[in-house]
Image (cartoon, rainbow, N blue to C red; front, side, top):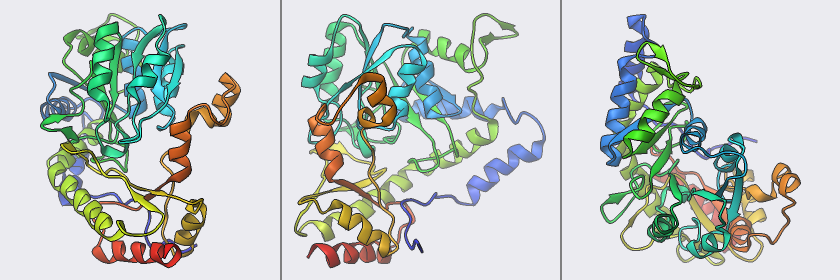
Length: 366
């Protein structure tokens, strides 16, 4: 199959190449160079938190924050099923139990009412996902629940760097937040992640966990090797310098999609609520009338790649076997996944590519 338009392309420029090259050429401190601390400082400033600790992946970052708050066997953590599987796997890494709650139908993040139903005396944390780059519709209500019940709130903002409600950026609603820098995210270090927090205590714990429990010249606790390399951090700094430009490009593409798809039969647009600033990591539509499979195949036959973000975690083979989940367990999640299709979106996308994709959709849907 000749793919004319992939789901994403990585945006890079000569500054990215120069940043990485400078680290390589100096011939030292490839692993623990000054770029790491600088990147952490810049990310914390951008998000609006006191501290940031970078990791070799977003998954490592989630694992580390759960370890830092002492999630252990018998503890429960409420998560969405409609997410990348690392959201729930990270809980399993600690011996804890992920408890799936359903999503709401505005931004497709965790529903506060279902969270309330799932809370038990064993609940130690809640991890709402800011899906697709849009802030969670219920994040303030979830924060209130967490504060009222003394439950730790971790924002999974993997794909939502720069998203905000009014002027408050995601990553500042909870006790801590995780952002991903994987290759297709808003900015990228190739692979990487970060935890942001205002807690000095958590920051110190994370710093120990990320590098074998080392403080100064001594090892004072157990830790891991979860470090981000200097070259990756240098790339992250360069990428962060153009984040406003990248987000603007994504939002312009989404606007073009919206204007051309809004009146097509059996297609519903997913529009952010008022005062919600969406950074459009992905662009998804809802397809009615059991036409999703046909449209996906038609696009593929036309050289356009599309996919579902994400398959429900509770219906994967592993989780069905682990917890005996079945179809119908999380109705909103399953309904969304049955209708949702993500179309190509990337900063360098051309108007002609958008027009071609829309024309392919019209060929089947009109």
